[in-house]
View 1: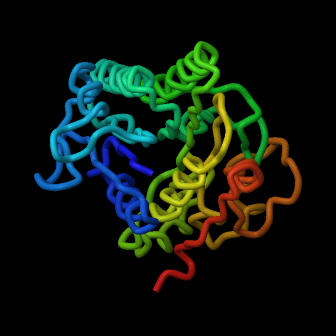
View 2: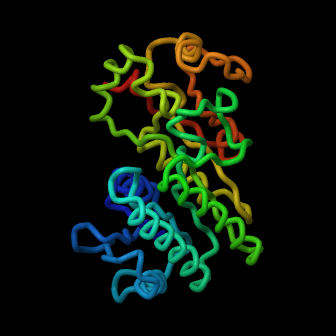
Length: 281
């Protein structure tokens, strides 16, 4: 496929661009930051005209796309003032979704966020492991935007039955260089309780994106995307009893299995995480 990746210069985006190209796809990075050259177009995602023009074609770079992967955003709470985060992210996502529709692109995969599950879980989750079945619980402006983006996608596919939009609720993105810090988390169960001790290796994030792009469907759906394990060596039962006593447990927690359920992604997308901090050399 010919694929546009917005935010392809970011932490997850860099890996996604590399892995999609390695799989044989032609990929163009649409981002405000990046190295000038083939496969990169500088675009302000908050400017609809620029986004539409870039998706339709850019001189000798490309003549259009089969699919869009939208990762470009202020990537977390606290990086910018709340109003700036809201205005930037909601505008960018609307522009990408709408420009794709205007250009006839019907295959969109984008980064939602684990934060819509209720992070940082100052109010405990309704049950553990968490999944996609309970209503969104945004607790920050960043998370609120992610929730609104999902609602916008639901309406857009209703308007356009041929359209596919897949929201991937990525956990905390990690690269191999980040794994050296993981053993220190065991000392205090509350250090990483904010996302139920979850993470996602960027390479597995790229795998999930490719699976979602290849998924033959229409309409909207959402998936939690996390590693198969937690960031802890302490067993799940001990962690949950200490930090979330009284929360309903849904089935066997496993010893170190992820508490951000990836069962739906496994079942429908064929997602199968390959990377763990425990086996990284």
